[in-house]
Image (tube, rainbow, N blue to C red; front, side, top):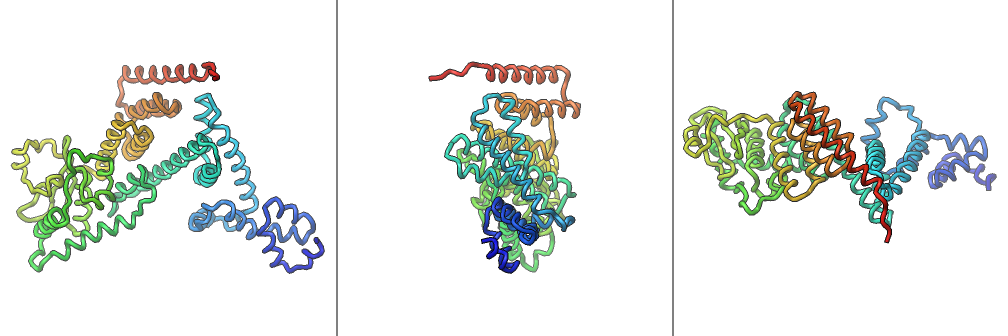
Length: 425
């Protein structure tokens, strides 16, 4: 058999090795110097890597990762990934049986530390296991990895100065991290562009001033397209997400204001986002008689002067221009409140993490600390949040003592749970 294999040309031997299991390929290449030479081919091990770990099929990620290292050792990379897979599998199989909270949390963090490289292993493990607890853990950790990717995208988003698509990009990231991971940003851009183009086609030769275009947009957006506030009994988290607002043409005040503002920007109509207690407006900043007039998106785009706002019990001293980050945080706070009311702890923690990534504030940090002590058992993270609160200088000595006592009580509670005897039936 070896003599026959040796009689084949190099290209054909290479082709045969591609279809062998890696262990068999290694054993085969030990039979002769020629086979070893062929078996050390970087191209062979690169193809074996792609064949085993399917998420590496995204060649753009690989090209970017190894662009500065054209001499990457694919065989070594394969071995390293193989060792990681074995460690991941060992941890995953043991997780459902781990009783110690601190050990479970440590194991979960170890899995998450593999980042995107561990994602495919988790996916395969969850799809192959017959144990529902193991599948639940795999799904949970994949969701957590997705969340870490979103938080990294937030950091990249915030590192760029106020870009042309700052408002909508943040809203898209928020949705992708809260239940819509496959939301297509390009499709959202297309829908916003289509609305702007529809309004542009309504412009006449007389609509050459900003205030004339402002009036046309207002009529088109609210009257013809029918964007409006939702009915009180229809309050769902989906009314806060940009793609859902575009689809249903109804939403909460701030989500409607966001869509209206980004469409106006595409038409070079200056609109700012105006926040106030329990309400949200936009303000026209352009020329003409409607300069500094307000638009109430929740009431069908009603245009109001400052005097009319006062008559509607909207004190103008509360009107503040909101930055894109402040808009995103307010949207997230609305969702945090909604998820808290419905007991969706995972989504509430996810929204909190996004809000803190955008703009760390005392309320969100303290809230997340409480979730870690009362629900997740991630007490190291709770301590980090406490240190972050102290660094902000926004917590009193009494508040610090209260939170430290809460963490200590959680440590005691989890320790008691870990030492409690197991009752067998």
